[in-house]
Length: 348
Image 1 (cartoon, one colour):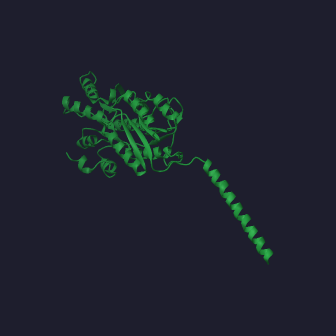
Image 2 (tube, rainbow, N blue to C red):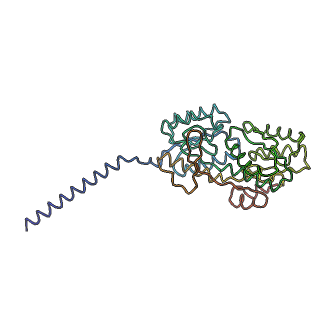
Image 3 (cartoon, rainbow, N blue to C red):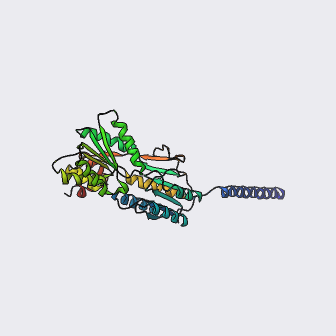
């Protein structure tokens, strides 16, 4: 009997020792795996071209709120439309050793070197809404600007009565303007429509877009439609039309669904705008930035990923879908979604 008890005790000791060894091996293996950073104490840098545009103010507010909800602080750097300042600010974020950087570039090719320096330090970089060229960005998030151009063309073809169109876009260095023109051309190339002239508004300076519209109105070929780079450009165009031809309706469109554009649509001064789901875009950017900062995989996403080559490599890109807004669907798309209130849209 004593011998049996001794054997049992010895067996239990051997089994216990074996379990402890397995736990030690398992712990050792786990210690070699890269582990996500804690959910707190993350800092995301956001370098933005300018905050002078209504659209970007909204993007930034949404981004900050979502990042904070996920336990990350945000350092916002507003370049004030300066390429040099944006590069300086990116280097400041590098010195701060932030966990990730989101950048909305003023010039698609002007920050390549700064982005490469961030990447060389292991800091992930997301290109936001505008593609950064010739740099190793981790991810590009945007609204499909080619589809913006396609929708502008399709909807304007239904509304414009003549064939002489003009384009007054944003800065030429904004790669989204290139994509819009590609989408526009794809639709109109088989139609009688002719783009008489394309003007690029340097620095989104709306005095320049106003002056260009005045020049067009005083020119030899009267415009049958104006395609604008955004709603703020469209507002300057409408201002010029109201001054020189207040009794003439010229179809005008823009993008971003700014409050002024929605009001103009209700008043009949602007044909339509292209609504871009910027709340969704900004929240998704914050989510991806936090996941990358924690070294977590973002390859699995509910949104479609279609790479785009930025001159450096094929960059994983998430494309969100735009949709046009006119007086017939404005309530459903804009007001019911909470993007603008009925009181602000219909106040006049």
